[in-house]
Length: 83
Image (cartoon, rainbow, N blue to C red):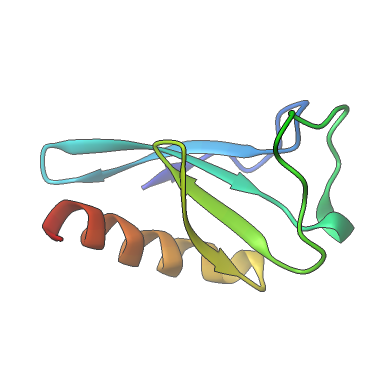
């Protein structure tokens, strides 16, 4: 799994995940207290406490800490790949 460590101007962390031959686009929106973006994307509002994880544009998980993102993402990708 690859993730950029610094947010883009819209505050999302961007990266990708790979499971076998499948690749997934990953976006993570930080919670309000961690949000450092220059602007907010329409339709996306930071949660008060949760990191929101999106895979291929769909919300797949939420975590309370940045350290939990990798574990939650692995679970979500496994579920997507293997049903």
